[in-house]
Amino acid sequence: MSVPTIHRGSPVRHLGALLGTGCLLLAVSGCGGVKRGEDANPIAGKQEFVAKCGACHTLARASTKGTVGPNLDEAFRASLAEGLQRSAVRTVVEGQVENPNRFGAMPSGLAGGAKLASIAAYVAEAVDRPGKDSGLLASAVQAPGAGKPVVEKGGRLEIAADPTGQLSYITKQASATAGAVVVSMPNMSGVSHNIAIQSGTSGPILGASSFTTKGTVSVTVKLKPGAYTFFCQAPGHRAAGMEGTLTVKP
Ligand code: HEC
Image (tube, rainbow, N blue to C red; front, top):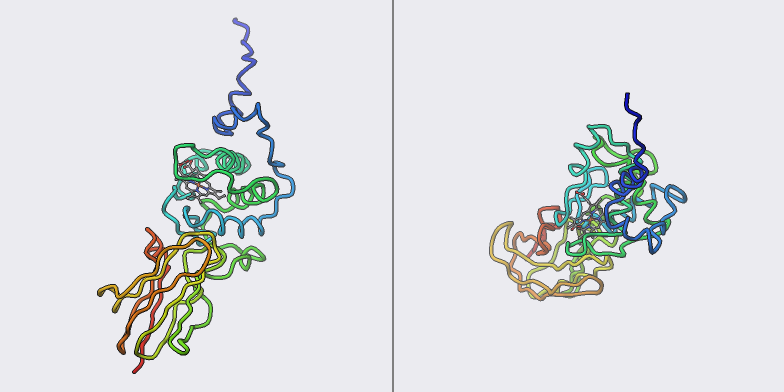
């Protein structure tokens, strides 16, 4: 009988695989920036996730529909089915945010400390779970586009982008009287958006503002009575629901 060999390095390698290779490197410079598990507040985590991550990632429970990065429900589905613990998902999420691929599209420094711990705690509980969030989590983030319809006044129409970072304007309904209208879009979200006005739902685009991540942009359009669509031209945003109807009366 052979004596089992103890691979002294293996638990570390195992942990390293869990944390993502970047984190192993950072162990030297202090990868423990996040208080793992402590101070985690899933409600704040959901709000932060929607604000900082949802524009790029789909996560069904958070109602986010970003398509720049992987769909997070799908990303963890196979591993969860194979028995990956949700606590390990949390560690992977923290590792990814601390050390995104340097050559990838995910920015670094999106969150740290208690905020990141909260985001990771929420994501770990939410990924690949059917149904909807309940209790306080359900009301943590306002439903996208649920605001009151907006009305043009004196040739000006303001349609704000969702300030929480959801791929939506605050409302899905706007109305105006015919003539020249300055459509302005305040955007406090930090996510890049613009606003374009289209005839009908698939007709010609009458005008489009420039893009902004924070600030207000506007476009002037001449409108005849009829139905128009306002929407965001950032890739994937309209498909995610960032559009609404503009009704123009004589
Ligand atoms: C600007 C777009 C963008 C933002 C914002 C963003 N990500 Fe990502 N994310 C990506 C891309 C692209 C990838 C694919 C891998 C890479 O490039 O590093 C990724 C990968 C990931 C992965 C790994 C998924 C897998 O398949 O292994 C996780 C987890 C993740 N992101 C979580 C987050 C969290 C949490 C936030 C918010 C704090 C966030 N991301 C914000 C674009 C983004």
